[in-house]
Length: 550
Figure 1 (cartoon, rainbow, N blue to C red):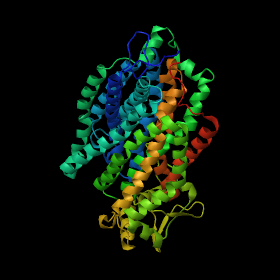
Figure 2: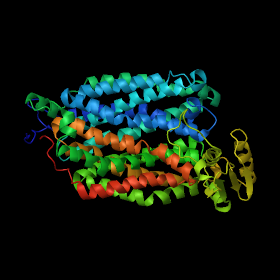
Figure 3: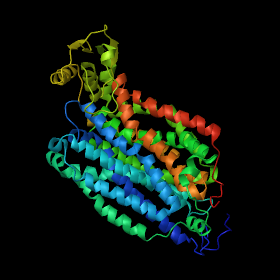
Figure 4: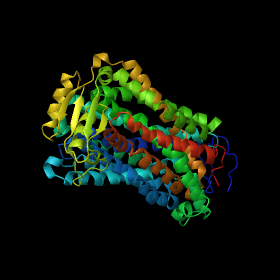
């Protein structure tokens, strides 16, 4: 199926029913699709932004890293289920239509987010609170699994050849803008309310506001027409009757799906979440910067960096998508360690100086030290786990020393001051006192923060995000045929972002607590980025000149 050059004033394909895509319609499609997707990302990332705060609200107290891991596990659950949403809604989108499918997804997303604002906390209903929270996160994840592929496909199928990278790059800005919006709303709520009021009821406001966004999003999407390429395909009777089978069980499409995952979206996912979410968590949890300052730094970097999504989408129309994505993975992998080290130097120099002069060791029987990822009622925390938790929570690196087998006593040595045993109730205060005596400060001194250099580092990491993310929508759309495009592109995208990317805060936090090195969690995104670089460079080919009407 081929489409002739469009007449004057027409920028996209001319479907079989005679309807043409004008420049005005293309702009309306980009605006409406992007704005609705911004709202969906806002909904999805509210939880992620508040994850450290929710650890105290929806999970049991007593072990702060364990509670944080639980919060991150619930956060990750929304990502883990996204590929299943891609399967369900991708199939629907390839059979029924792009427009109506992402109308359904936005209803699911907005409804689940609004319901989070009505949830009871752990103190009120016990373990039912995290169960309900995770259930709503799963609904959000399913909805987002269907949303992105629909929006990207819909915009690309309206865009003219040679401008798909630029057109779909507007969709790529939505995740960052949604993240920025969530930061802004939360910051306003937290600054306008005192700490007690925000903890009791103020945290619900950002979630409840999503109802307004939902109504507006549905309204603007109802005014859109169906994709012209999908309309033509349906008119010609060429729609797939089994898009799941055609996408994942038939060669060569199944091979392309696997290569798209391992050679493009996996690396893109970890670079995206490192540059935005992990950087934010590192500032607040590890470097002990106050939330408003951290939100401001990250928010400014988002504002500065967001136009780069459009730039790299535009550039990919000229030099190709693949080389830009691969370059982003390479540069990120090479520079993450020095960048995060520099972030410590410029944001909390006192912490850096304390670590340089104070040797900290944890002596314990290795068999008593566990690697915790998914934390719940089944989890058991030993003295070793609690000691490492307390040090990790303080943003401190330490060295693990092997104790004689069978030794049940843990010894924490802070510059020569030894704490023997780590009782759940007394260990924390004793450790805090010993750290303070050694010169440790529990908060970053804002007077010593080099704000300019900290911002430069965050902007650099966001440029990496724009390099890998700006061209990815057009690249994935161009890899697959129209009749199975929605299904085929959605699955690798959401596994790459939902599983490889979404698991990053959880795995990185667990790796730091287990290893005793505040930078050790970076090995995860670096390893995935290198894998993507190798597979993508060897097996994938450029797509910018592909005719997507076939």
